[in-house]
Length: 346
Image 1 (cartoon, rainbow, N blue to C red):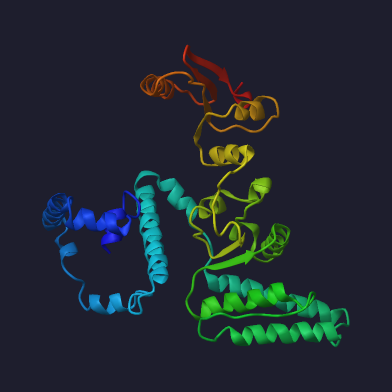
Image 2 (tube, rainbow, N blue to C red):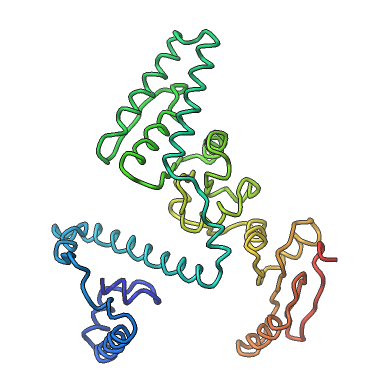
């Protein structure tokens, strides 16, 4: 817990650095900060100082993965998950106070039970179409029906690792979805992440799911999603920040990284959709907007500050931001500022 509290605004500490802060040269400062925090809580929120009724802290600690059997990798993973949840919660709480329309825009995804209802209705229609076409007794149709039945039956099993080995054409996509959504509903889970190794299959799967649940009700977030930003909505864009949606379709690469090395067009799209001003050292953004007709964000500030010293450059940037008007492309140079209206604002 000390790791999470100390890292809240600074990032996770190395274990030795944290021990030095708490018990070594930083001990006096840490004790002073602790006393100040306790006094503030006593004055304004005394309930924070009392252990919640019925809470057994020692029992909770025994549940920390890897703690009892001394598995440092499991402990490290648990710590990072807790830290991620804490930072995300703090970010969302701050957003709710400062930018309520974004908080409102995040809401609106249906409950998991509604996804299950939509999927079951879709599967029922497929069965009816198969019967109407006279294919009910085809070997492939019967095999698919058995796979689906087995997946639905397994959905009530306790949580764990499950595998499904079915040949191509056996209905794996919908059968596995029937399992995982039913499993989520049965166990009270609120998120399903579909991670696929190939982006072409990711997009194909997202199209299938979008037809069943509605494009607005899925989040397609993968390493090549910047090539098709028109496939997302404002709500799904926000959900990509923390995957706070019932159904996410992604690839294994995106699960390891989020938006690194995004293309220039993707950066423009993000700034435009989020109502941001783009500050950049890259001249290519001006080329995309003025020569290639890309839609621009509210404003672009292009920095060409070499060979200015850091303090002079910072003062010039602050001056540019202070007088920046929406719809402008501003070049910030040692000799001053050059302004130009963005194309769609002319």
